[in-house]
Image (cartoon, rainbow, N blue to C red; front, side):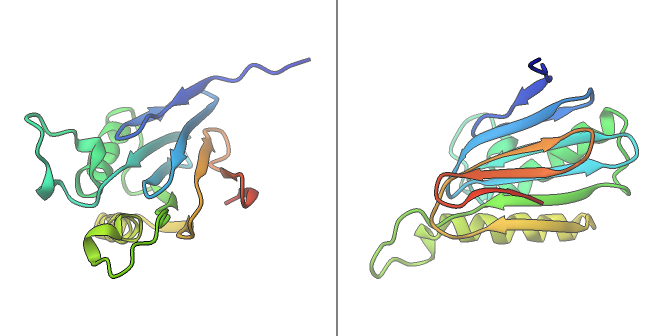
Length: 165
């Protein structure tokens, strides 16, 4: 018998939460960082697929808060608290932030993956959310999903296999 599970998908520069049993997933993490937050009491899980470190470089007319590390994590916390989670109980796990391409002599501008990771970790620290686990760096892509019932973060990579955090 095949089990049907509720699945919420998070696209690039997107964020969402899950409040019912099931999983929340994002694919195609390269230099992007997948930030997951989880309230173990209410079992509300949230995920943001962060593309860039800072909204200060935004050029779009209406700011997409989910796109930038400095705005996405705050927006995700607000969405989760609005659904009944407690910001005091949230815990975080992150994955991604690869340096997908090497550029000879490139400066900090092209270190998007490491910069995304640094800013996500700083925002999580600033919000006083414990960072329980991370799988960041390298030069490979990742697909991640968090189980709403357990808070377990599963990371799939063609090069690195499957791991659970």
